[in-house]
Length: 201
Image 1 (cartoon, helix red, strand yellow):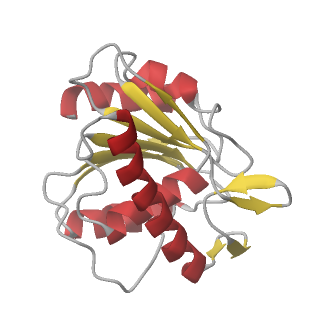
Image 2 (image 1 turned 90 degrees about the vertical axis):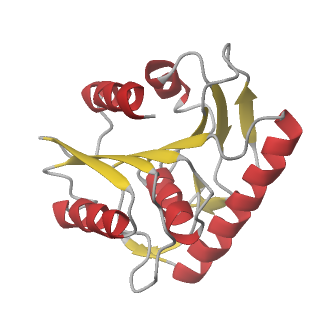
Image 3 (image 1 turned 60 degrees about the vertical axis):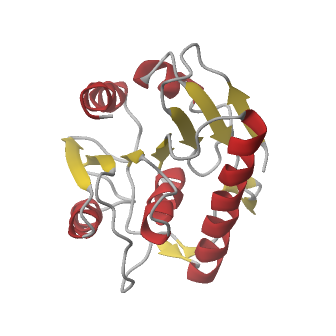
């Protein structure tokens, strides 16, 4: 998978896994990592799927309707890539915190839904529930921050609430933060994620 790896100034810190939204790329969220933890190493990945020329992490059938078969395949693909990247760049595989926006937040949530040890934690900006009617692994000790917009036309409020409930049912610790905004990624929610991160992770 196309990616950027930037070694941090403090190797004891988490590795931040950056996962962009539809139409983004591996450079788009680098500034977020600087705000959340400027000392951390960063692995920023580009999605392997194209939709009308725009990179994504998995296919969808329509707005808000995921191609579940492709989602499962791409989640496995990403998890295997993270194993390889940890070996290549010599970082602790179990020391990874995802920062995802929109489509990237959905694939990060899918990693949590499918693999007990894929992530140490996650910051999910405007996510949806990746899959329903599956049993989640035991996520005890996993820390998750969800940022959602009260007027988000793409990710309705119910999606964020349901995602929180499903993750908490799997024993993850989840904080849900609301902004009176739509689907856009705002500086204030990123700063809120930073405050959560430095107190929790």
